Structures are given as structure tokens and as C-alpha cells.
Length: 169
Image (cartoon, one colour):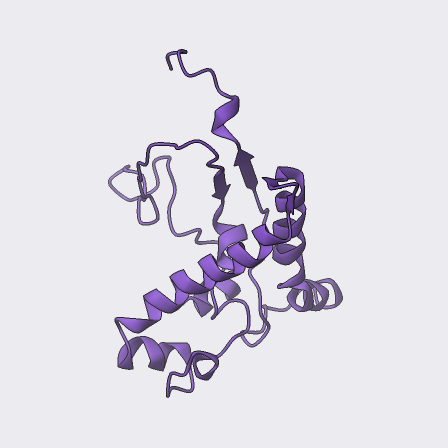
């Protein structure tokens, strides 16, 4: 299943928590659970699907050859380079966020408001051509060749050192 379908069919968010499947169960295709202990100076960054999808090379308008893959389409790249493509997606996300975070350090302190603004700007800029197309053509389907993923982006930042360490959850 390609990511291009998500760009043109926003009816399927790739998962739902409420009863959705014919059995009445939730659709948990996109649910993941991760655990990591916080260290001093850590920052928690949560992005919803709309926000992080715009960091994926395929969605952000990049092509496989931008990453030295000998493939014309991302579908072909996933078939011919099944191990490399997920690594490219991950490194693209990490590299872009690292670049963005570096612009948000003042006096050796990461400025969370600046991080939010940089991510928000990026997430809005990537799909701007698609957004413009939709405004001018409200009844047409989104063209697959336009970069970006539309939706309501949620960006959550927290510096855990502000939490009381002896407080129980």
C-alpha cells in the first residue's frame, strides 16, 4: 500500500480508536507504543500524523533519486530497496528535525516556542501547493503529484524537567 493513497483519500486515517471494524473493534493499524526514560535536558516532541507525514520524503515531494536510489517512483523503490526505504524515511525525519532544532538554541537552551514555530512553518509550507489547488478547485480530487499531506497538525512539546519528580501519576 503506497503513501500516495493517503494524499488523495483523506477518509482513511490509517486507524481509529472507537468501534470501526465490522467486528466492532478499533482499527489499530497505526497505533504504536514506545517507552524511554527521560534524562536531564530531554524534550518530549509529539507530532500527529498530519505533522509527521510532511517529513516523509515521498509526501514532501522528494524522489528516490534524491537519495541515490535507482528508482523512478517510491513504489518501485519500496519493491527494489525494501530495507533502505524505511531507513531513508527515518533519517529524513531525524535530519530535518535536527536542522530545525539547531536554529532554536539560544544561550545553549532549546527554545520550545521556536521549535513549535519552525515545525509549524515547515508542516504548513510543504502542502501549500496542494492547499492552493484545493482552494481553487474545491470539487476536484487532490492531484497525486503535489507534495504535502493536509489535515490538522498537532505539535506537542514538553520539557520534562518541569515535572515534579516525586509526584505520582
